[in-house]
Image (cartoon, rainbow, N blue to C red; front, top):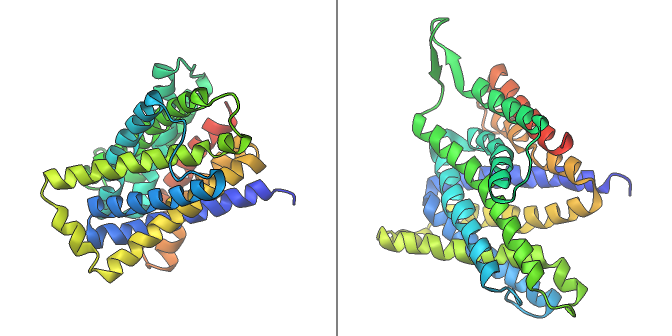
Length: 312
């Protein structure tokens, strides 16, 4: 089927849009920390079942100390810091603006790759960063009297959004390093299927570390009773389960299929359409007013993301 990869990529963007909306609802009902614990624990169990059914082991075999170190570090930065910021930003500024700040992930990844992996950053990448930042600025800034500029959003929400985007980008590079160590740790006679399932095994490691990390933080903050109370909140649990289903399960699985069936740059760009797609349910389902300036900002940020993947 022609353009199968591109179609799957669009489905990924739709899945992640649904994830953002469900996570918004769950975070308001259960709290960001609680939702992250539930999401990561359930996703770790599902990924373990996938590994068991495909390679015969429910845990990531052959993963050495270096693999756990880098993937664990990526979980600390991407999940515990990044997702904590993201889910809390949903509570303060909503999923629409929270997802807008996620367009900061490619610039953050580019800078981190330059610092940790020695990757070069071309003028095209710099242009992409400028376009992305311009789109965000258009969405969150306005003039008060023609001279002074003010923020349209609470500063705390903006800082959380920035933390979410940067955490996602840095965590991605750390995951890449961890995956490289994982590949190097595989014995020469490893079955080909195990090599293909490395992204799933790596994601499981990140989920396990992230889940344990969030649980430890909740224990230190003496918030574990909130986790117990969450299971009595049927509406909140429904949205938490939907967040898990459309995010780590459907979204990640489809994204792996997409990059195999389509050009990686095109697939990545289509999968990053969430900040634009999320405007549709906000207008037609939630009946929220969205200004033309905010739509322009989202589209401009999306253009910046496209430049990262297609111009480099």
